[in-house]
Length: 187
Ligand code: DGI
Ligand code: FE
Ligand code: FE
Ligand code: FE
Image (cartoon, rainbow, N blue to C red; front, side, top):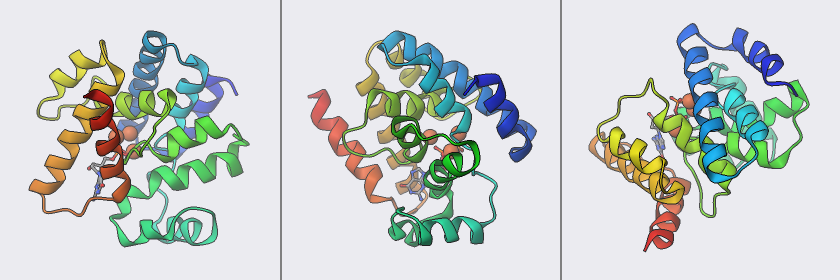
């Protein structure tokens, strides 16, 4: 699928701000893909679709989680975690995207998971560091993203977990699995 067609496909489903975020994530993902020798075309498509399901009604997302291979465990966690997994299902149903690597990058872009592929890391990190983001400590992650993909993902996950702990939010197990796996990979 061509990137320009994909962008026009997602546009009506997003707010203006979310669409602009999506464009920046796609540009960042293409740059990281070049640095780390991953398919630019696939990283770009995954990035374009990563937040596709962000504004689906909660009952619709719940329906897809209950009635597909997605883990029902998601329903025990904050609904903010649902749009990645549901997006991975919907891009196949609505755009015919069957590429499992692209779908996985969409699915895990919020939580991460253990044993992430380079494509999954590129989309995860691009979503975190795109130029519109302003998290505490983000400049250090941006600097690291130029040097070491695994270490930069580890830093992003560490920041996210610390942020969630400060908020007294629950943390989805895949987020811990990702953090633990990256920790083992950087030492
Ligand atoms: O969709 P975006 O806003 O572009 O970014 P995202 O899909 O990475 O979602 C980020 C939100 O998800 C952010 O507020 C942190 C939150 N998040 C990430 N991992 C977890 C989490 N929230 C909870 N409750 N548990 C998690 O494990
Ligand atoms: Fe997202
Ligand atoms: Fe993210
Ligand atoms: Fe996003």
